Structure formats: structure tokens, C-alpha cells
Image 1 (cartoon, helix red, strand yellow):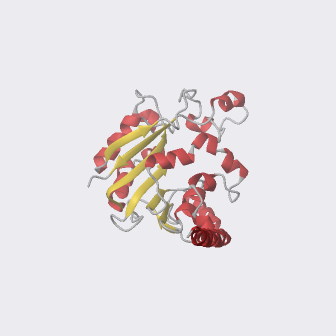
Image 2: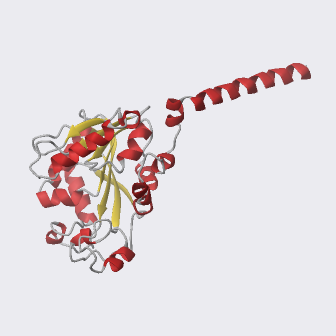
Image 3: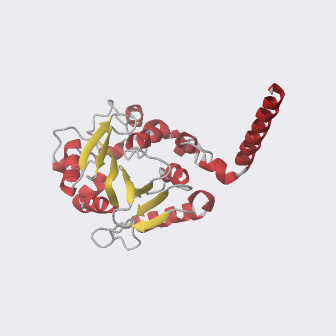
Length: 278
């Protein structure tokens, strides 16, 4: 009996080892097994993009929002695709990634070229990005960023101030609400103004108060579900000659006081989670 048990156990071990070796040899399976951390630190990302992980905390941020590999996720205005490099391959095999990007019909001159650059980026690496669905977001004309009530999560990173400047913040949040399933999550990361900052500050500085983001989200129907301080920066006084763009990585002041702004680092940011009610 002991001899039979030994051979049975050995056979199971051999099968398990063979299966493991097969899985690791299969590129598709190995990619699927990668964690958010592995994608964030992956060699497919430039060194400068990986360096910004220290100030943007992408893994902790995505985990706070509750990202899972089998979700349908919309990234709102991904620009050059900094977060796309992490999320799209992570979601590729079991989930769905929508990029709600600028429209080729947008009036702002920088928007169509930004879209083209993004499309060139994802086309150049179909193994990582070939399953991305690009939708155009240009309220009030183009607002179907996913089928209605189809997405588990919509995420926006440092965009709300632009919508305030355009006077369209309510239109954007209403668009997210329509695309999300009941129970779906809206995650917001944004440059954080001091609590007493007025609309004049928010329309010009790039900083927004937490209270106003919550107000706009509530007006769209969302329920506040929590916040995190993982993207906070207590060294940022939030008042700068050229607004938030004074700080890295923009350095709009050039070499003027560059050391001072380098020491501050990137902006103080809120990280807020909202839910569409069931």
C-alpha cells in the first residue's frame, strides 16, 4: 500500500509540474497571471513612466478603487496612456477596457493630435493593447463611452479641473453615470485645492476642492463611498504662479525656482470613490 501511495503521489506531482511548465511556456497564460505591480513595473513601459509610479501610486490607487481583472472598465480621457499601460494588459484576457478619449471633432487644437498619438501607441503593440475599445468623449455631441449600464468601473485621473474650465463638469459626470452598472464604481483622482478655494481658483489653477467634486458627483446621482490619502502631498501649498502646472512634471516656470518646485514634488491629490446606487 505504501509503495502504491508513493507512485500515485509521484504521478500527481509529475502532472502538476508538467501543467506548470506548459502554463509558463504559454505567453498568453503567463501574461494573464501578471499582477498589477508587475504591469506597473513592466519593461513595456518607459523608464520615465515607471519613475512616476512613486508619485502616482498606481497599484495602491487601483486597488483602493477595487479593480479586478474580470471587470469592464472605462478610463476617462487617458491622454498618452500612462494608466493604460497598466490596466489594458491587466484586463485583456478576462475583462474589458474602454478608452473614452478625445474626439477627432474636438474644438481644442491639442485634442485630435493627442487622440492620434494614443491610437498609434496602442496599434504599435497589439499583443498588449489589441483588445482596447476606443470611444470618443466630446459633450454634448459624443457621450456614448460604453453601452448603457455595462461598465463595472469608470476612472478619471486629473481631469476634473479641465471640465470645470470648460463649464462641462456636470455633463461629464452624467455620462459616467449612464455608462456604469447599478453598483458600479466611479474613481476620481484630482489636484486638491484648499477647502476654502472658490470657483475662481478652480477655473484657473488646476486645483479643485473635494467638496465640489462630491457636489458634482451627487448631482449626477452618485453616492460617496470613501476616500484615500495615498496620493496626498502635504508639502504642496497649492498656490503657485502658474497653477498646478508650476510643479513637476510640467515646470511651466522653466528654470525659475525649479529646485523649490522639485522639492515640493507633484501636486497634492484627492482620491475619491463613488458608487452608482443599486
